[in-house]
Amino acid sequence: MKITITGATGFVGINLQKYLGTDFNVSRMSLRYIPNQNLSLQGDAIIHLAGKAHDLKKVSTPLDYYEANFELTKQLFDAFLISNLSVFIFMSTVKAVADEVAGTLTEQALPEPKTHYGIAKRQAEEYILSQQIPEGKKVYILRPCMIHGPGNKGNLNLLYKLVCKGMPWPLGDFENQRSFLSVENLCFVINELFDNENIESGIYNVADDQPLSTNELIAIIGQSIGKKHMILNIKSTWIKRVAKIGDTFRLPLTSERLQKLTENYLVSNDKIVKAMGKKLPLSSRQGLINTFKSFKSIT
Image (cartoon, rainbow, N blue to C red; front, side, top):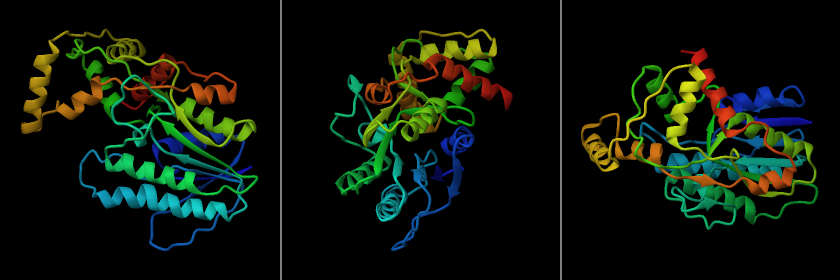
């Protein structure tokens, strides 16, 4: 099977190429949104990873998100519909549904995205779902939660550096549970979409089996690098006050970062696991240990 990947130079794309490369003929497709462009697709399947993620430096405009995540997806999907390709996989996000979750997020939740990133991804989903799919074609919309693995950057890397430096974790008073997704488990799911003909077209959440707290993450980091960790239970009300000060003076701890580090965000993977008829290869804990070990190899 010949598979084309857009966004192949990104974090997920690099890992996915390595994973699929031994069993499939994988090629890259470099593209960006250009008004009125007509795309031509060859091969058997396409995995659409290209898009614009969260802009941590806050220099992007709303239009950047809608062009990269909605308009480009629309052009690519239109090309798929008239092509000979049989499989289209669109990498969406749980943020196309909710930025905050009460309970556990399932595919039945009513989408209410709040950010331009999430709204644009949801618009792309809606466009795909509104089209008539020709017989013989399959279309999958994947909604991963926070993905981690070799080459990952972000808040997990910040936590890792904190433990490596022997600094105590000051947010122990926050009790949270959130879902994570090992990039290896994500690659396993995508591979199954090609190997298992019984998986029907549709929307699927993708997450590791067990949620973990941030305090558990700190402990896992310590275990993975063989270093003792320390967790301080400073009152959460005091921490929130410090974060508000950080908002004003641009300190490392801001209200937004505090929210990301301590929020509850539970995602159910029941639908995709039942559809595959297989368990994910990595436990939540082992996947994170592998990620943190990869950090160690590049520091």
